[in-house]
Image (cartoon, rainbow, N blue to C red; front, side, top):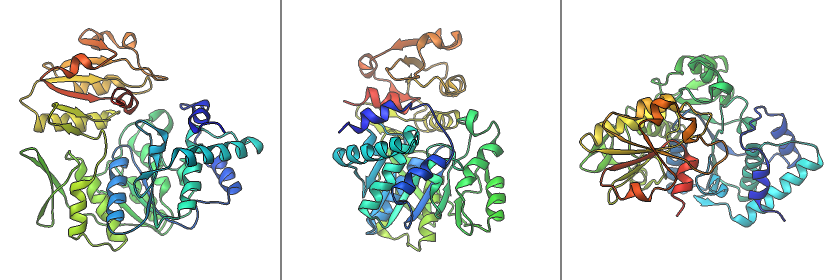
Length: 395
């Protein structure tokens, strides 16, 4: 039996084939394991992972068995498929990927890497039989492999510019793709502050679906502690950043649909949620790690730095993939007083130092290891690519 990693890496990671025909065929051969479950389906440009994790962890705390599907992974493929927060075992992952891959080859179905993992997730969840599946889209929504499901609670997080070559070059075009997860007569969870709200509302109305009202939530960071403020309450919240207010409001919207009260059990869960590399601050080493990888995410990171670390000198460590808008990201992220280190890392399609515009190359110091930077007393900010972060922090 081949390892799942060997099979998956043989499928071109960057060959993205949008459309549901292939995933539909393979899942039909597997007995349609995606059907018959209560599914919370999450699309958006930024915030999908955080929103998914908040919902997932609250449901677990309330006694439900959950299945969670996320992407991409940081260290290992098995991170993407979890039941009650426990990753799929390497043995089961290898077994299911082999079985699905052989079935696809036998029936001349050419699956992309993401389609293969998505099929594996549904197959695994069918074995584990959860009460709820929290399902994050990979890219877009309308033609994303996860959209093979027939019914769900659709949740749409922040919409902004990313993957414009596939999803469209305007907010309306991108929003239209995200709105593709809305099924007829469903209850839709989205913030009215979302840039794509008008398009989402239009699609929801066309499908006789209802957008539910959300709570007004604010995030406050005081004396090294983070709080969520709503309904006259102030409770500790482990996920940093003002943007998490919207993600938490979306999660609470799902709880409202499921008729789950926001009680002490839920509030206690907010203190405990862990989500690696999302504004993850290590006070001891004065290090902040954030996997922002598009201009919108980088703007959120920069705002957080300006609001909470204004007086500290900063060392910015950045690396990304070639298909990302690194110019816009660096223009937002870097200030004149910041030290800038460009990280070259070993990964397919990663941006190299020599490929940078002279404007950025002239002020950057190229690094391939972080030992030198970690010794600095400055606030060390790592961002740009989740693949880079996975490489350099694996140990």
